[in-house]
Length: 228
Image (cartoon, rainbow, N blue to C red):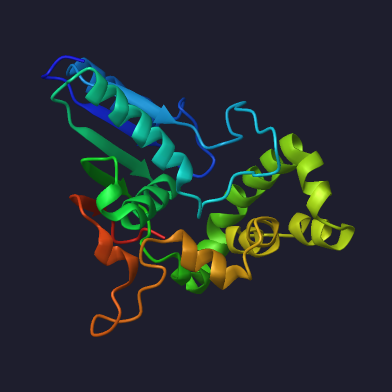
């Protein structure tokens, strides 16, 4: 790693992979400028194997942590004067920000940028328009992936009623409630969402600031007016 080169860890969206257009476009631009790019593929996606029962869920920050620590270790080992930046998109931005907040001063990144990722996913249940407009498409694709690749793991934890409830899920909120929360042993949907967002434990500006107050590096979250 030359001193002039920086290192970027890209984290794709909910159903994405390293072949997504928005990932490739940014990666090609960064590489052309002389930087180094790594893309973290969510566990189980893009043919990545999952041996045990710990399937993908979006409150888990340990995968981003492991990837960040590995990259930082390589930079340190080579004595390179390189910045390590995390860049997340949509669900990747949500998980990236959550990692930065939870890691606090132990974060392995030097800076992080998230595009179109919520900080408080508890608000997701109130977005009625997205639940009927675009969530059904993403929920179906996500469910098809999980059932198609990890039926053995699902059957080991779900009874017939739970499986049927998951198959009836019409939105991402429904899928989170019927699959991701119970499969991964969260108390309920609210518990899952409170653990997913960097501001999931935030109550008010005059009270407890929650884990978002632990952010120790520059964190930029870019949103558009109509982001879900």
